[in-house]
Structures are given as C-alpha cells and as structure tokens.
Amino acid sequence: MQRWQNILKKSIIHGADLPLHLGGADEGIDLTSRVYPMRINPYYLGLIREKNDPLWKQAVPTSEELHDTVCMEDPLNEENLSPVPNLVHKYPDRVLFLVTSQCAMYCRFCTRKRKVGTSRMVINQESIDAGIDYIRRNTQIRDVLISGGDPLLLTDDRLAGILTAVREIPTVEIIRIGSRVPCTLPMRVTKKLAALLKKFHPLYINTHFNHPAEITPEAAQACRRLADAGIPLSCQTVLLKGINDDAETMKELMRKLLTIRVRPYYLFQGDMTRGTNHFRTSIQTGKEILKSLIGHVSGMAIPTYAVDAPGGGGKIPLTPDFILEEGDQLVFTNYLGKTCFYDNAG
Ligand SMILES: *Cc1c(COP(=O)(O)O)cnc(C)c1O
Ligand code: SF4
Image 1 (spheres, rainbow, N blue to C red):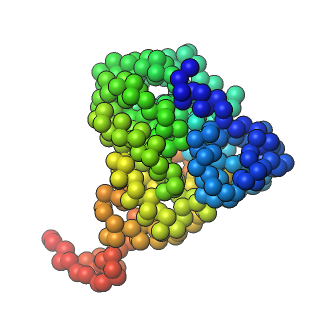
Image 2 (cartoon, protein in one colour):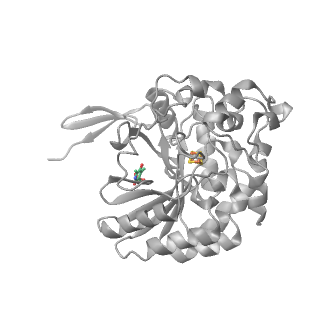
Image 3 (cartoon, helix red, strand yellow):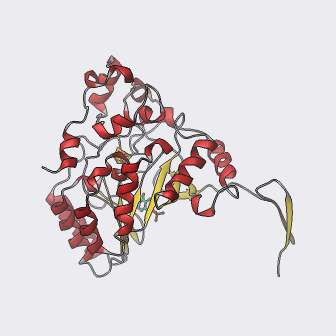
C-alpha cells in the first residue's frame, strides 16, 4: 500500500472520532453523516485549527445539512443530461465523465452530495466502458473533463487505463482532470503519478482550493510536481458563506494560488444543492468581491465569477458592471471609481 493510501485509511468517518479541540462528537454530526458521508483524512484534519473555522466548516457535517428546505437534489439536472450513467453531456463539444465516487475528503458543500461517497453512485468497469464508448461514437466531443468524486483517488493503474482509452479516441483533443487532491491529500501527487500523467498531453488539471490556509508547503509541492510535468493548473473555487465570502480572504487566496503555479479559473456561486443552503451567499456579495479584486491584483489572479444555471443551462458569467452609459460614447468607471470615456467607433 502506498503512503497516501495509508493516510486515507486513517480518515475520520464517525463523529465520535472527531478530536475534542475541534468540538468532539455530537448527535448532529452522526445523524448527518449517515445521509451525507464524512471523511476527513489526517492531513486535512491537521489543517483545521478550531471548531467553526473555515476549514472545519468545509469538512465537518452539521445538522443544517438535513434541514435544507430550499434546494434541490440535482440542481444542475445532471442525471437527465446523462446519456449513459455518470457521463454528463451538456455542452456540444465537451463532456463531464465521472470515474469514481470517492474523495479524499467529503466537502459539505459538494454539488454532487446526493451521491458522492455513497452507494447511490455506481461506477464500475462496465459504466466506464460505456462512457468511453459514448465519447468514441460522438465525434463532436473534443474536450473530456474527468471528474467524480476525485479521479486522483484511483490507483495509478486504473487511472492509466482510463486515460489511455480516452487518449486513443482520435476526435478527443484535450483531457482535463478535476481533482481536489492537491488541496486535500497532496501526498497523493507522487513523482510516479506526475510521470504517468505526463504521457497524456495535452492534459490540464483543474484543482479546487477555497481558503488561503489550504495553501501549505505540501500543496505547493504537489502543484510543483504537476506543473513541472507540463500540466497547466487552474482552480475552481466555490464562494462559501463564512468561509471565503470576504474580499480580503479571497484576495489572499487568489494571490497565493499564483505563487504555487495555479491560475484561478472559476469562482462559482454556490449551486442550489440540497444540504448546502447555509453556504450560499447572494450574487451581490460575489460581485462586490470580484470588484475588489479587479484592478487591485494581478489580472492573472482574477477568476471568472459564474453561476451554473439550475436545470442544466450551463455556466453564466457574472461580471461586475463597470459600464455607466453605452451610447456613441462609452462611459465607465475604473477600478478606483474614476469616470472614464471611450468614443465608440462606427
Ligand atoms: C462545467 C462543466 C463543463 C466544463 O465547462 P467549461 O466552462 O468549459 O469549463 C462541461 N460539462 C459539464 C456538464 C459541466 O458542468
Ligand atoms: S472533492 Fe469535489 S466531488 Fe469530492 S466532495 Fe469535494 S466538492 Fe464534492
């Protein structure tokens, strides 16, 4: 067994095992984790400093998850947009291919919490073969986004099998892997894994960090290994109430991502996923945070703020508005609030 597998095996999955300094066990944790599983591996547990801190909130179940009467099981309508189970075909030229139900930690705000880490997400060789077959038959698919769960929790051999099969399809141009492992279990990114991934270029990795405290020397090393293997790294952050919904935290996170060679890609408005309503902020909050970034930090540090439309409409950018008037002359305000003008041509 590899070191990362050993670490993962020691994860906390019962409330009773939650250390006292993090609040210890309570009934809410146990009731909730029976519906929405808990898994906090020793690495991520070690980053949590106290009860209710931003990392605790991402990892520890609370009874609020069971009392959400606003949100939906499957807000993005993924199940109906799956021509074969666990392959979501929403946009013409790209698919989301779910290859495992396991994650290194079960995030409380997960969009797929209806099934991730549970027996409701059935993935086996047969479903994976069906997905690959679908991609092969639908030649308009250029971009395959491999996700889950977390694909990097598969063994090197299983992962290599899937990547080889996808890479063999001549109409597939790029492969993307969505993984939170660089953040939640960075020791999974072994030298061997980086060497393996390198064989499947053009390959991109979208990772997922939500708070500056997640950017540790271990995470930096994992990202360095991947970047040194020529893999462009980006980040899909989720805007989360009480975790990162203030300008200073977000600014620090985005800046720090660049220092570990990760380019911010999306900042997602929280999906309307059942069990996550307590994490949602208003769109106004998100726009104000974006406004505090634009012009004030490197443009490289600015993600696209977007909402994934309920019902499966796809991602819609929510750019803060700088335009005051749009006629023969464009009147706009700059990042410092100064009014500027531009003569509209033709
Ligand atoms: C997010 C998503 C994609 C990828 O969208 P990009 O904007 O290209 O990153 C593809 N398919 C599904 C179903 C998605 O949810
Ligand atoms: S790592 Fe991703 S898929 Fe897994 S629980 Fe977290 S948000 Fe969900």
